[in-house]
Structures are given as structure tokens and as C-alpha cells.
Amino acid sequence: MEWLHIAVLALIQGVTEFLPISSSGHLLLPAALLGWEDQGLAFDVAVHVGTLLAVVTYFRNSLWEMGRDWLGQVSGQRQATEHSRLAWFVIMATVPTALAGLLLDSLIETHLRTTLVLATTTIVFGLALGWADWRGARVHSLMDMTWKAALIVGLAQMLALIPGTSRSGITITAALLLGFTRHDAARFSFLLSVPIIALSGGYKALQLWLQSDGAPWGDLLMGAALAGLSAFVCIHYFMQYISRIGMQPFVVYRLLLGGVLLWVALS
Image (tube, rainbow, N blue to C red):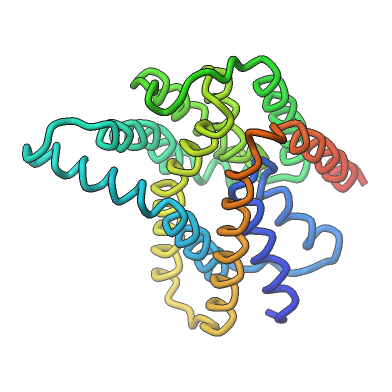
């Protein structure tokens, strides 16, 4: 791959992985508009590693507390805490998507990875995000999370298997409809991304290993680094400003992106 292709695709992945605007829709555009070749499985694995390192680094304190207290509770050395409960909620919300991904991966790759599907889901779930942001009560914090709420968010996350939905977008939408604040809806969504990105990246890495092709390590390291840095900056500013700016700018952007994708699909 040319360095410009690597830089553009890695930055797109890093920024759009966590914003509620659909990374798959953006990654389609360079190929559709500029005629670029598919980046390949190895590059997908690299940028997934980069974004995973970014979110783990940003939430390292929370993840450490969750892991420590969860392991302590499981081993019987600690009583349940808010951190161990949050860890259980993340696990509970991850299971439906992990199972659905294993069962439906080939179906989705064969029938749903089209530009028309991307355009439709980008628009439809963008409107859903706007509705949730407008109608949500925004009164609950993660301290108020229950197993029912976690399961609902986890079931909503399954929809992100459909290209164009946006994993962060649909989980934030569900949390907002359940009455969580914008900040805590985003925080829970980002914590949920850790096991999902790890599982997705691990599955792709296994596929890559089975193919046993030589890897262009320089390209992959550059892609991982750029994706990780851009993702970290994106998470930082999103968490700082989301309570003030709300979701409507992302809704407008999704509608514009969906319009462009629709034009590409029908042209």
C-alpha cells in the first residue's frame, strides 16, 4: 500500500471507530470515489489493534478497577463493588453480539455488505440517535445501571453487525433511551468496545494466521500507530464535550454521509 492510502485509511478508522458515525461507511468511500483497492485483512487487524490500545489506554484506570474487583469477587476474596458490577454488565452486554457475530458472519459478509445497505442504515440509525438524544431523560449514571439495562444495550449492539449502523452509535442510542446521561452513555459504550474490538481483532488475526501470507510489517505498524493516536484524541475530546454539544451534530453528519452513500449506490 502507498503511504497516503495507509495514512488516510488508518485515520478514518481511528476517528470513526468511536464516534457515532459508522466506520464502515467511511472506509467504503476511498474505494468508491478514488478507486483504491481493498486494504486487506492484515491491515484490518493492525488498525483494530491500534484502536484497542487507544481505548484501553484512555480508560486504563477504570478497566484496572473493574478487572481487579471482578477477579476478587469471582475468587471470593472481595465483596461486590460498583466496579465489579460494571464489569459484569460489560460482560453481559458483550455476549449477545459475540454469539451473533460467530453465527451470522458469513451471512452478513455475503448479503449485507453493500453500499445501499450502508446508506440506509447510516440514515435510519442516525435519525434514531437524534430521537434518543432529544427524548432521553438523561438522569441516570452508570451507578444506576441494572442487568436489564445492560442486556438491552447489549441486544442493541447486535444491530452494529449490520454495516453502517455504528457500534458506538447504536449503544449510545439505547443508553440514552434508557435515560442515561450523554457522558455515561458514551462511557459505557466505550467500555463495551474493549471486548468487542478484542474479539473482532482476534477473529481476524486467526483468519490471517490461517492464510499464512507474508505481512508488510512496516505498513501495518504505521497503520496501527496512526489509528491508535487518532482514536485516543477522538475519545478524549468526545468525552470532554459530548455533554455540551449533544448528538445532533453527528446526526446531521450521518444524514449527509448517508446521502453521499446513497448517491454512490444509485449512480
